[in-house]
Length: 453
Ligand code: NAP
Ligand code: MG
Image (cartoon, rainbow, N blue to C red; front, side, top):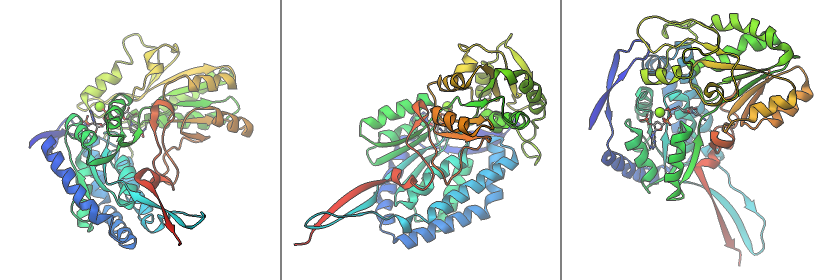
């Protein structure tokens, strides 16, 4: 087993060394998972629920340790990292109620009794990106385990530390060996093997649209079940009748949270022409007020980007001569820092306007009326999230029905609430995670007819 060094993106210093799992080791883990799953699915629903509650309690007890690991490994501000550890705990606790409620149907038919069962799929492979290691792990892990599947998680190469610790916590909480395994390593090795191995029955992939398409092609060979959570280029639509002060004060956080490394980032602000100038006046102090700096400080709102390579990629969207309207704080010293940056005016053909940047760069564009706002919002291959700011209820309804995206918010920027379904339209993904129906994605419906005579 080869190993590699994980860096702290705020300091560029090594954090620790992590083993990189090989293809052979991945195959062995899949065999262990297959055998563990046969026992796990037979664990009585009440006992499975009790073990998941114990797992949530173990995550809760380790919350601060997990948050500090994420600060060191991902450079997330500590306040955000604490929320992420809390989300992991809450998602496990929410789906801990599911094993005891996984009811099928009794369907009236002639000549007997007809019932449906929600059977587990078997071994589920979770391929996780580096931007939100704990929340995204939890969204697949908790419902998959609740439904009686075994899980193998492949964290992103850059950010494996919290996932590795969560794997240990599962064992400490009493989950049987092999039911949940974490395999750090390369996507091209471990991730690819999970996709190609016939012993894995489902892949949950969160990451770039480009790699997601390869994963989909791989899964097609075995008609393997697949959930995809991919990229985004979401719009924040601000109408002139809205509370402009609030819209402008909150807009930076809707795109610069997690340094813009958020699939739901509202990275295209669209503002009604008559309010454009006023909005820009209000936006400037809000952007300059974003507290960028040491992730360990409780006041910090934005940390560094994840890696030197990613910073170079983000910077490529703001070449010399770019129309930078204004920018926020540029942190000096080591670390992969990039300041909050506002581009305006930009043309509709500009790369910065069209492509997912996944960094703290936002464009602001005027629109003339409601119809054009919807047209611009939909003029993208993506469809993940978006916000609509207006005081006109009818308009809020019309625009939220018109925008082709999976997660919209009116007069707010919320998007991921674990009680509600989450996922993308168009090239932002396939399927839905979270919410009351998440177990559908981790079960097969089996229909059984029993003759009465
Ligand atoms: P990525 O490069 O696509 O990687 C995602 C995961 O896939 C990583 O674990 C990666 O491993 C693995 N991988 C790479 N090649 C693979 C292969 N051939 N087979 C199987 N797995 C492979 O994405 P990223 O750069 O980490 O994350 C950023 C992207 O994620 C953005 O586009 C963002 O929008 C998207 N995202 C979407 C959502 C959503 O819910 N819709 C949420 C968060 C992020 P390595 O680490 O070894 O490369
Ligand atoms: Mg990548």
